[in-house]
Amino acid sequence: MIKVERLTKRYGPTLAVKDITFEVEKGEIVGFLGPNGAGKTTTMRILTGFLPPTSGTASVAGYDVLEEPLEVKKRIGYLPETPPLYPEMAVEGYLDFVGRLKGIASADVSGRIENVVDKCSLGDVRGKLIAQLSKGYRQRVGLAQALIHDPDVLILDEPTAGLDPKQISEVRQLIHQLSGEHTIILSTHILPEVQTIASRIIIISDGKLEASDTPENLMARMQGHESVLVEIDGPPEDVEERLMAVEGVNGVSRKNGHGGRTSWEIDTGEDAAIRSEVARAVVESGWGLYEIRSVGISLEDVFLQLTSSEPDVSEADAAPTEETVEPAVAKATPADEPPPPDNNEEPSKQEGAGTS
Amino acid sequence: MRNVWTIATRELKSYFASPIAYILLAMFAIIFGYFFFSAVAIFVDYASRGQMGMQMPPMNVDQFIIQPTLGNFTIILLFLSPMITMRLFAEEKRSGTIELLLTSPVRDFEIIFGKWLAAMLLFACMLAVSMLNLSVVFLLSTPDWRALAVGYLGLLLMGGTFLALGAFISTLTKNQIVAGALTFGTFLMLWVLDWVNAYSTSTLGKVCQYIAIAPHFEQFSKGVIELKDVVYYLSAIGLGLFLSKRSLESLHWRS
Image (cartoon, rainbow over all chains, first blue to last red; front, side, top):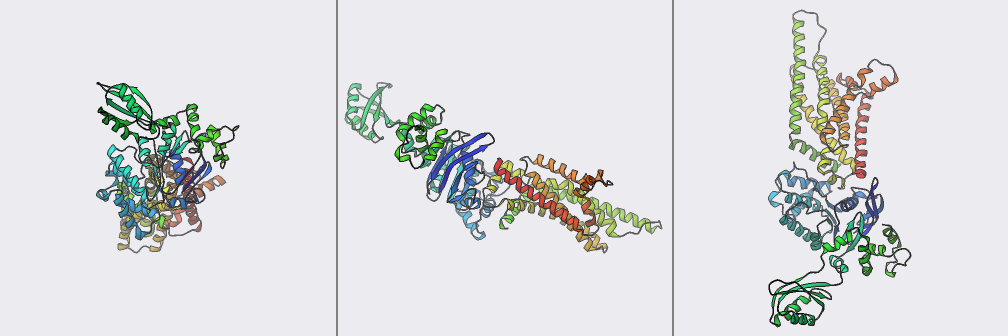
């Protein structure tokens, strides 16, 4: 649906986006993650045809953003960081205007307005002036504006910025509901956001693409295993022995507990499915189980490691994940070393990423 | 064309949703009414002096009321038109709504033409207000309506020129005040450009006289359509709209 190849954007002497390549399939929700000023907005603006790239190409639904901007714009719904609202207009009048602007036939406009008002729960405020709306409602009007022409692709620039927690969860829910019908790209610098919504995460830092993978894979590549923390009231030696006997446990280490209890960190092979096994073992032995939780590495850790500037971090973690993350691979395989066979098809990309 | 109309109607609605349109129209009505009243008062004064047997030049309504009133209209236009155009693009750039327009499937030219058309329609409201005043003359006398129609054509062309140039200046900045000040300065300069060189025969003087905006209206106010004046105004409108388009294009590259 979206294809971005070797995209570079330069503002005068500063490089905002450096040689980014990625693809988004139909129906995917992709989260653009990166610190402020990483180039997320610039990339999105290029996709919407607002900014032309300095070099490289971007296409939406097979239409190049430079060659056929009108075709691209028909297929994109875009919510910029600040929703583009006219405060002096009423919600309904505004949506009518945007609908016509997006090329909806006059006869269909009111039907589409009903649809998006319903989707974005704007029924209560449809007659109100936008100037009178709260931030949360404005954001929803912004979303409604992006949805009005039922676009194939939705591009949302920090859709939850500046909202209160309740509004954030409402907007997230809304985005989640939309995921079936639209291909969605959303940017954020808040980690839990992409973790909960996105099916794939693209991490951008300093204009470079650092990683592109599912949230699960990203976390998995940081650490091949996960750990479970348990707090147990029981004789430490017996507990350790019993825990080691549970299937799937690789190791047990003792932590400090409080009261008479002891905390244990259990190293597991794959995922947290052993938690129930551990719980059963503890209960069957007659000890008290006070707490059990997974302490798998958080996306936050992944993000910080990927976007921190120390080169050793990204190189160290790139090695075991050759198949999953292309740019990181390119970085890890210098020119004198032949690239792994499964990456042969795109030598140019490696060259580009290698220079960064 | 549909896109142009969509943009124009939204723009016009927002003129009337804010106090701008009402204030401009009210100010216009008062100032124009004053000018018209004083023209009529002078006419009445002259007429009564004539009746008292004083030596007066031959008088008619066209020359003594309509022509000076139309001339005064252009001066009001000089002051009020920057207030019409200063927000056109500057406001959209400030609030970020320009991003909506530029990412919608409309051409840059449709955006510019739509906005210019909205400004023209507001200006047309001013013309309508002025006609209300002048209709009084038609009630009491029989002025040449064809000459008046030509005068209004001239006003339309001059207004179009001001609004097109003002729209261009509004694309240059995010700040309405900056846009307004620049626009007014530019208009005033265009207005007085021929003053210094009024009697000059040098090439520079001739060029200045041609560029100056007011002299081209003279013939219109007398009810005469001169091709060179029409060409001047039309090409100035074209230039303003073209520059706006270029400026909007460069927005894509700069922002």
